[in-house]
Image (cartoon, rainbow, N blue to C red):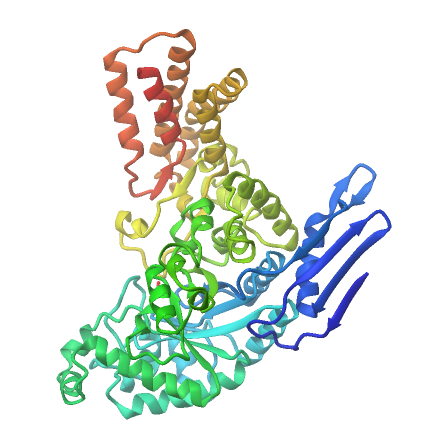
Length: 588
Ligand code: ACM
């Protein structure tokens, strides 16, 4: 029985009541919520409770009173660097609903693409998108789809930097001589809008006016990140403007620009959101700061009376572990020292899916299941921090997300089969299961050739998961074994794994002749085999109480050092640190 006191607004708004109570007893289940939104959240909890049992579906008897800790719980998807089609966005909205996220931040413009139809300034999508953009009708549909799931849609148009695609269409608002073309490379680029020209604000006024009508949400994101100032520095007129307006430097010029654009946003009855670069001492109290550089700027914003959202710590493009994201708290670090009043200005956080290295095929595997851990951080009490419990539950949720149509698990096998050029990718899977893409921004550094937006994302690094569950489990088994917990049983498990990895290489190498995509994989396979042999030797020494010779120790050290140095394949063998623990224990 579902009881709702009052219907929510058709389009959800920040700060609406999302609480609910759920009572399940032998005579039935009762869901009570003050609003429709609360009922939606409660229904998702109910779905999570449903168990498949030998006698049918069942739900445990529970009594739950629930409400979110933060009102702003988001996922940003960058559709600029790689275009992400609507069906992919819709299934990710389904996933967001399942884990009670309530803001879809749509990063719609980048150096590499301008992704929305403008009827007033049609050159934007015509010349800035390679033909990959959303029509306004499609945008309306997606907003309705999100609203039905209790999810707000906040658009972002990045300016004055990250704007090459705008300038490909309207070079007259650029700070350089042009001509500009849609960018194919990754990184922080020189092109920037010219803040000194009235023409710039006239065009932005037209565009923001149009978009403000299309997007019903009260919040409007103007980007503001990573202006390198090179075009401004090279333009004498811009430098003269800085002098004559007493703006001091490029940062002063950007503050002037942000202020002018914020006024346009306000005139359209919207609230400005921007990355932490727009936080200046003179910033108006009405804006919202999204922190990507660190939690300190959220604390600084709060001290200035300005609202904030945390994204530092939630950069899911960087291939960090769920545990690391789970540990990032919007009210941790610098924000912990804020007064209760100041803390209220911290609205929540957003996972950010930057898309240099994601395609429609593998994006789900970068978003899920780790974003479920971030969603819990943003919903649940601050003291819910048990990492092992989080992982156990995250993998249950991961399977449920499969059933919603997300492809983070189902997309893996076809990608491996393509790499292997075979219906049987089982040998490749054994290796792929224990590697992860390199972390942070290393992928670009380690590339054999500079990666561009045109590079196919069809390699092992693209198929492998950001976090290897096998490696995590192996690591736990090694820690338990070395601590003497379930020693005999863990030794059997460890030997089973290590034997598979050691022997896999002989079976995998012959496949290399069938696929050039395996060429970079072959040396990794050999490395995994050597590591596994090293682990097995270590277990022998440990179980017989024998001592290895110095030559053996030196040889293993060489293997460990090699494993820590990823090459052009841009993946890490994630079982190496646990094998190293075994080797060190054997050597003691
Ligand atoms: C950002 O990562 N430049 C917002």
